[in-house]
Length: 173
Image (cartoon, rainbow, N blue to C red; front, side, top):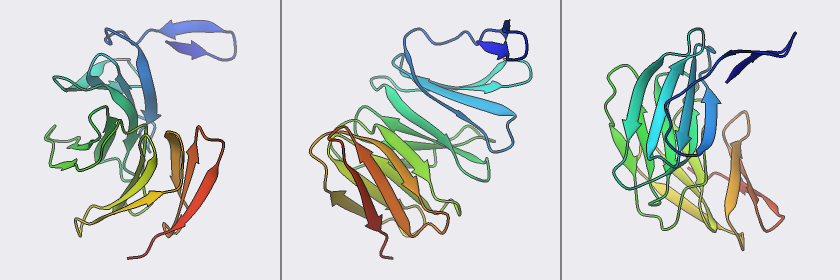
């Protein structure tokens, strides 16, 4: 639902997901909202109208985390099968699927220059180079990594876990 904060009234509902919604994110320009959930879909909504303009789906995986790239051209989602799926929003195609990790990707974030993605799964923080195709796995947590962030310059990655720890990682190119 979209609410008017000044008077507390509901302006519109965003209907479409068949099960729980696990993550939402605004596009950098604020014109779109993405949502991912346990109905195996990621939906993109126009914020001004509530119209569902794109739906991406999976046949078997829930989407735990969604994030727009800083330029607003791509959308990434952390999946239950341990992958990160990336879609081109203009075409709707999935040009990249980051694979090779076990356990649900609970959190996903782009670096400010959109070259890197950091993700967190059941125990690890993974940093993916979207141009070079390499990945680096940092293992420091005893439980699920539920939050990841890049510093403004993209060289430091932070991860937060259900084990009560926040770790800092230096990205080595």
